[in-house]
Image (tube, rainbow, N blue to C red; front, side, top):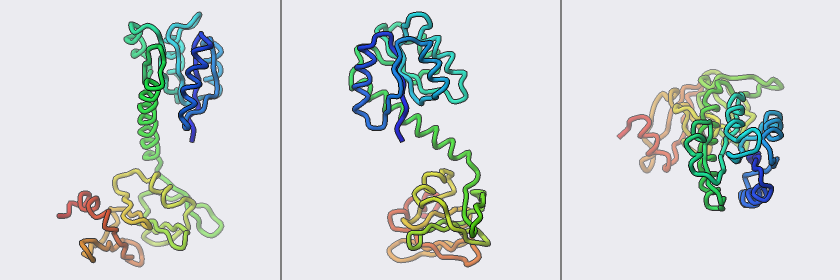
Length: 242
């Protein structure tokens, strides 16, 4: 997914230069350029982009004032200040800014800032996913919400994905990789390319070939699930195995 980005600077050539430099990053989409804060603010409040490059010293409403107004949004954008005056840094960091670039803006400065923005965005997304307590599964023609805590394990068979609980099995609506991205809680572990397990639902750990293990799970069938060799170390750390 590309990050929708707005550029705000009272000098049009600088807006164009920043747009050109950001165009080298495939995950960035420029959705607006503005030379005044009023128009930019109206646009941002309506369209809700994820990232704003904002000049501090703007005519009329300053970039600092605009940043303070944006902070009242339910999900404010990441703000990166751009200015020719390093002395503005202290005032800028009193706002919800995540970065500060002094002019001239270079490809290197932008790349460093975007690395920070990507890291923050990834961390926020992970925190948000961990707050989701349910996933949807299929039971016949019905779509059912299921608590994550009810999952014993998830597996792939013949390219289809299934979710096993203590009592039943359901068809999944996500791929195994999508489940792996969604189930960020510590008790869920990808132990094999075909399996994700709930560590809290392991009944028995059975030594297997070449230092690996089978895990007997707490579903109705007491399924034995293999642990791939490259996941053994992680499993040992989590379960306190020697």
